[in-house]
Image (tube, rainbow, N blue to C red; front, side, top):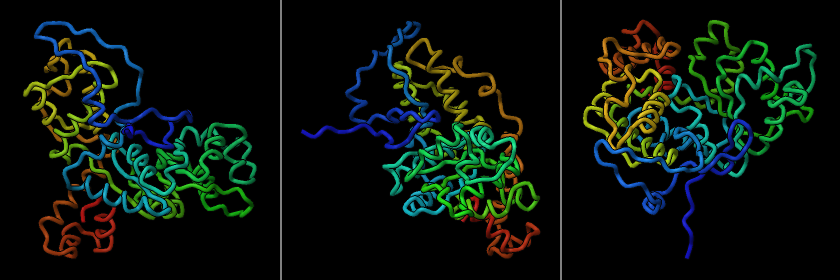
Length: 359
């Protein structure tokens, strides 16, 4: 009889280069997995000892829970783009799942059997020689550093450039040289490029804070991930799926949420997006003394009544712009009229609409 495999991510690796653990159990496997019986009210439940697994946000299945709207459009675009080798730029606030989607794109791509390597700003910053001498790109990202090892290991796989908007001008130049292989001397890398940022790189490029040539090289396909507060229909399913992953991670549960807890979670603005939601649920799973998670297990900021719309600090300006553009598009019969209301030309509005998935 054939054995059903768990839904692991082939080729996906942790930041230290080690293979990532399985990301999710199949539903059938979950049903076969023994669970501790539910404790009655007031009764303590001993925790089972289980091996540590990846963060629940490392599981693509959790991110892919979407009932439509902007997130579903983003996922559809990602699946279509994954079939090619064009660079993809993921844009969204902190915690919206950019790194998770990057891993999913790798799994959907023809390069799925190759490695998935994350190269962060910190790794890049540690790889440029202080004396500034020139040489082949692979030598510049250098001299035995982690960045050099990761770049050499990514052959035939996917290179994920995280926090790309935070790179210094010097690093932007060196990265452009690497991606362009301007010397043609064998210093290139054979990898699919996926980059991510929580900044509006088009605006940054116009202001001279980000290289336009690097922006255009990275943004052949741009995918905007909506913040969690703009996904109210997805929130209940996302809560349940994250809770399942956390139960498997900590060996506790299953748990139920009281109606008061669900109302509090639905009311919260989630400035930290899905990452914040995962942290709040993980706190509750760890602290809950019984099989029922109550409001006493939630942090104070989640229980506090909302007073003003909550937006993460770094994504606040872009989020407000996106909301304003969405409203103008909804209230205008044509693109030209919406552009006139916003005080911009139609081509600029067309680019913003495409970048933010408002089509």
